[in-house]
Amino acid sequence: MKNRVCELFGVRFPIVQGGMVWVSGAKLAAAVSNAGGLGLIGAGSMKPELLRQHIRKATRLTTRPFGVNIPIFSKYAEEQVELAIEEEISIFFMSAGSPKRFTHKLKEAGCTVVHVASSPTLARKCQDAGVDAVVVEGFEAGGHNGREELTTFVLVPQARDRVDIPLIAAGGIADGRGIAAAFALGAEGVQIGTRFAATVESSASDAYKQLLVTSGDAATRLMLKSLIPVRLVQNSLTEKLLKLESRCATVMELEAELGEAAAKRAIFDGEVDTGEAEAGEVVGMIHDIPTVLELMQRLVSEATDNFTGMALSESLKNDNGFS
Ligand SMILES: Cc1cc2nc3c(=O)[nH]c(=O)nc-3n(C[C@H](O)[C@H](O)[C@H](O)COP(=O)(O)O)c2cc1C
Image 1 (cartoon, protein in one colour):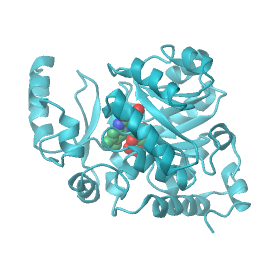
Image 2: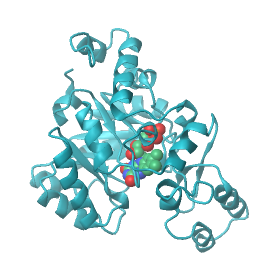
Image 3: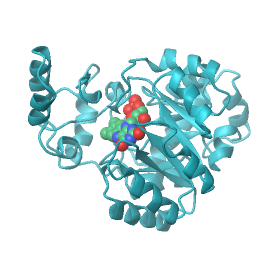
Image 4: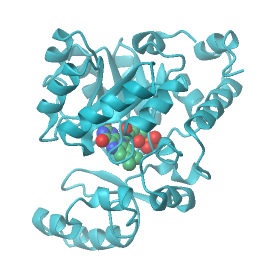
């Protein structure tokens, strides 16, 4: 299909797999790119040299475009940016920080820069900083969240009214109905996280993938608003954190309860009851662990079924998914 998001990244479908700590290594990113979407290597859980290895591996696994996601608050962000430029990455999805920090440098290096925003105001600031596209992420989303608590349904149309650059919706999208809804609200692409975490190629542990499948329809809570808000599947850890938060515990007390590498414990090591099991509200819509290709085929065919005369529908009529 042809729209601004597809053209910007050189991909067939305007479906981005969000960068995800402990989930989106080379294998997942390459599988998504091979299936016609845009795969992102999530640098947030990688030391710089590991990121280099994943970039090189992805280059071997796909000839299609893929990118990296670098959370700006990471102590390795600067080094990762340098390294990824050196490795000839040309698509950067930056998150969790100011769009002013790296946009100029990346544009000077000839890269395509996308920034993740949690409010229409920040989306506008991203445009003003010179990014090529913006992801607006509602607080249904898995992982770290903005403090604004805007849902995707109100965030996307307001952002559409504030920016002219390509707009990608994220948060709460797990099937073709969600894709169609995002386009109806004014998005030109979608970024999907949690749904891709429960695929064969995701590097998350089997226990975490099973948790996503079995969690049920109201399993997540936005936690740790006094640190960095994060959406987690409720478990023993979140119960303890909630108790601490209800008695206004200090940041130090919360950090002590979290312990070392809490997200790695749940997502990668499979300690799903005692670690930070980052996931979005869409867990209630996840019932299986397909391959990326199966999932992409499903997303495209469901989206096609759900479009009613919108731009994507027109384009897909001439490009009938995977048939
Ligand atoms: C396990 C997990 C880890 C994530 N890690 C990151 C990250 O490192 N950087 C980032 O920008 N977003 C991260 N996200 C957010 C995703 O990239 C994506 O924007 C979000 O999951 C979209 O919402 P959804 O989960 O409802 O699909 C993460 C999400 C999940 C579920």
